[in-house]
Amino acid sequence: MNLLGIDVGTTGCKVALFSLQGEMLASAYCEYDHQSPQPGWAQLDSAAIWEAVKAAIRLVTAACPGAGIAAVSVSSLAEAAVPVSAERQILGPSLLNFDIRGEEFLPELASLFPNERLYPISGNTFGNQYTLTKLKWIQAHQPDLYARTYKFLNWSEFIAFMLGADPVADYSLANRTLLFDIHSGDWSDFLLEAAGLDRSKLPATAPSGTVIGMVAAQIAAELGLPAGVCIVSGAHDQCANAVGCGVVDPGTSVYGMGTYHCITPVFATPPDPQVMIARGLNTEHHAIPGRYVCFIYNQGGALVKWFRDTFAAVEHRQAEAEGRSVYPALFAEMPTDPSSVLVLPHFAPTGPPRFIADSAGVMAGMRLGTRRGEVLKGIIEGVAFYLKELVDSLPATGIKIENYRAVGGGSRSDAWVQTCADIFGQTFTRPVITEAGALGAAIIAGVGSGIFENYAQGVGAMVKLERTFEPDLRQHERYQTRYHYYQRLGPLMGEILREISHQQG
Image (cartoon, rainbow, N blue to C red; front, side, top):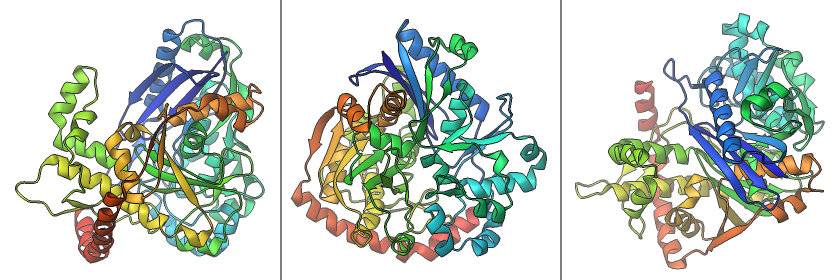
């Protein structure tokens, strides 16, 4: 018997089949780009991505014909929702969290939901990145779509629904709508009423690892799945990443290196809201019962992809044609010492603590002799420096990070992981399977379907560790100096960057 994990991200989806011992039997990946119909808009073509997910499932089932599959679960990006009909028809695109639509509602909603009132309910501070403001925009500007929509489903819920499950949101994804009460485990009537949104447009809620249906016979036949595959409620991709690399106990943390670089520490007791608000940090349900997480993130992986497409477009196309990745060659060009290029990674709206929407990136220290390897190294250093600023403020919250598990596409680079270990001055451990979102989803499927008694058993059976990276203390000291320069760069350039961003907008 085997388990199927699906991981749907902002720039690609992965489907993988695992044995109960954690061996990846087959996998398939489809990459895609978001759409920008107008400046500042960012959306996913819901129908096209559903077709991509189905194509990936077919590739996996074709590679393992006759494989027994007991259960499936889905890990996904958060905030973005897909409008669907009761007949499982897709009604429109999915607005991403960095889409500017919904900003017009911020002043009024912020007055209704000051952080001191909102955080004790939802565990989040207010912002336009959440589902709430996107639904308000649809309600105001596309009233026919809003009226026709049966449910607005986040991507994990949507994929499960299209496979045949009931419309059910797991707690970790419901948390990212800004409409969820983390204490009751249900939608907040107060927040919904104040926002003027209909509870009937939202799915039911349940913890991760809850059976929510079976794959429908017709879709099973279309995708090559056996009859009777159990569908289990999944998780926000960062929570699934944590399960897939064994980050289940307080003191441990994911260092996710995907489109978003996200540090996800685990803790057992929600910290004081005021301390978390001051740092722009959330408090949300982990996929593990009785555990919570917060997210420290930026779009580090998207920035490295931009570097690839801008500085190495020809090599990338050639590598793709030959069926290989261009990244190993690019990382081999990086210097072993800290880069001479200092990068402020504000190429997209930033994450906590300031959530800056109108900034812009900076590359400082460029000379005629600067090579692209220096630029790439400066980018990955800048991404890590950004995250380190908030990690350094965690002691006041009571959240501890004693070690990191490195996962995601970027973690396959030894040089990249070692650079992070050197900058943070802490141990990084890489699991055998670095695409932990799909593995985490599979473990969740195993727990929910009763194959594993609990998450500890599932993680113990399926997660294997590959290598530990110890920090080079000499390099760490050198990086501390670079880090102090980095901390001065943003405030020094702030006003200029806002003016540049405003003119470009």
